[in-house]
Length: 342
Ligand code: NAD
Ligand code: UFG
Image 1 (cartoon, helix red, strand yellow):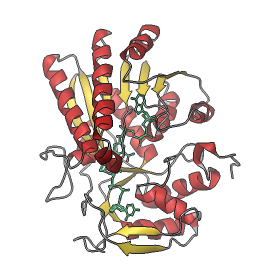
Image 2: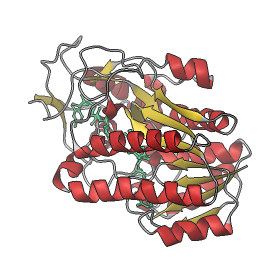
Image 3: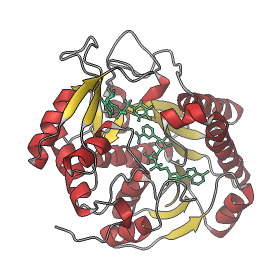
Image 4: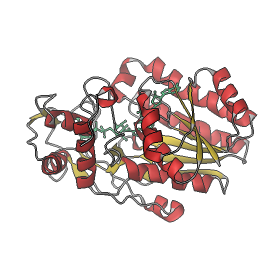
């Protein structure tokens, strides 16, 4: 079976490609490198020990997508490609709406044109907006608090409408919680541009001495230690969720949302302490004001994915920290590093 992976050289896409190849799928990757590097292609091949076809292509260019479908027999699509930085989406909303929504519309219309109806989509726990209760389960009312989140919510709605229009569609909406960690080989990981926004990439750069200290955004949330609580999930567990979702969409039709999280919430201080143990480094930090738009606590009820996809996250917080640290040490400048694997 041949799978088109959009955004395949990105953080989650690259890990998923390794697992797809290892599971015996043929893959065709497309990416425009707006947030990833060509080096990733060779690393995926090196880890998986298999070859695949890559296209540098943009989902905003429909002709390029058509050409990929003309040249390759595609059975299903895993759609990762999108812009994902919450803060940036507030500054440049048009880019976010255009890239994420128009890109998805182009992809889906070409899929229809070629009679390909199996789709796994990267949604986000951000579609739960602000809720009074945790854990978050799939049937809660959805909302969004920023343009990025609204693109995910709009795309979920568009995909629901597609299924209503044609019940051949078979779609999994995967709502990721907080993906962290890296491939256990130390060869694939998250490579943010500039100063990271997210907690774990920031901590790894503090630990290695590239950044002086972590700012902890608030210690007055109604959580166990006052700092923000999130459901961190190892990127390899998350990737495995895509294989399970793919198996499901290719044998059924319908549209279903699934939470991909561990079901366990950890605070910022838990993460600092665990990362310190895993790396053997002190993580200097100071408590600052809350970050605008942040919520206090978010963690998944992952039981639907366990029941319907037969998927469950296995890796704990310590493994997430060990693997993030290995990636940072082996690739101090991300994919541009001259690498010495240790
Ligand atoms: P990423 O930025 O590492 O990967 C996305 C890839 O898509 C990049 O390689 C980028 O170059 C590519 N891309 C973007 N727009 C494109 C376009 N128009 N045409 C072709 N390629 C394009 O991000 P990631 O962390 O791997 O996230 C993958 C998906 O998961 C995204 O849709 C993101 O919104 C979603 N998601 C991520 C997180 C997270 O915390 N990482 C959480 C929830 C959801
Ligand atoms: N945090 C800090 N200091 C930092 C960075 C983060 O204290 O320098 C705290 C945040 O306040 C939050 C926790 O660490 O309590 C996690 O923050 P992240 O930025 O790593 O993750 P978020 O939960 O804020 O956001 C992530 C993704 C979004 C997605 C959202 C909901 O980055 O794309 O989860 O799924 F929308």
